[in-house]
Length: 277
Image (cartoon, rainbow, N blue to C red; front, side):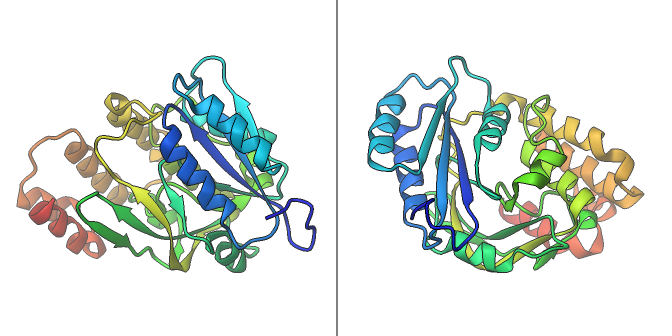
């Protein structure tokens, strides 16, 4: 992997991190293992208090394509991602959480799928719950209409840096759901999001993980995201969003409410959630 190889466009992998040095090392290695030949890695250390700075210094000395930026005080995931985007030199940007892992051909296969008329490309994800793993198979084409029901993209995409700049990146005022909000804005301005028909990312779903986004603010962030985009939604989408907010808040929902609030094409998903989750 060399940023000096100009036969292919430069792709910038951006990774915000905070106090997860062991997992971060694994995440960075998964980028170094990519088959796409022209890449750089931009890591923003959000004021980690563990040995993350030492790890990053050591890795940056070995790998010249690794660029490290440190926040002297914690700014959060959204701000850290925006800093990474600002410092990325690639025409394309691909995000990675510090506790997740890319499969070796992720960037190669996402770049194969990227084309004009689409705002971004994602892939199927392997969701790692520790004791079990589930593959999340996403729709081949995820439209703005789809996204206004719920986040059908997941946590990361590959897109053009200019697209991110034109929609002003991640919304730092949101306490959570910053990725969901960004996908809505990208789809609104630049077209649907395409899914590569491969499982190219392993997402850590462990409840014990420490996140940059404070979990106690997740509900407030999701509600704020809903309110921000409510004017784009039809009555069916608003009803379903309110139902999902109620579930997220831990409130009781009955079967009649489920059937009244859920669109027909999402019924199996919600019935499965109610029975097994």
